[in-house]
Image (cartoon, rainbow, N blue to C red; front, top):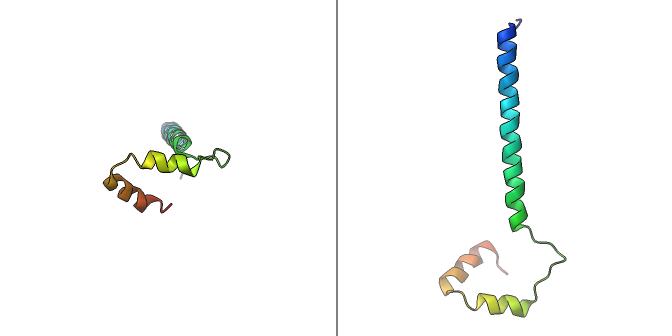
Length: 70
């Protein structure tokens, strides 16, 4: 089954459009992951974490427990 020139152009444009959409999604995921990544070298002292968490409401702290047991 041979493709006509019009069909070939249509498929080529569609594949390029899909490629651009995928690139945009990957870029967005990379940007989002930058915001939540934690570097091992940037250690926050435990007493500072306790001080910060002590200002939060109990309900919020219980929600954190479902995300991270530490």
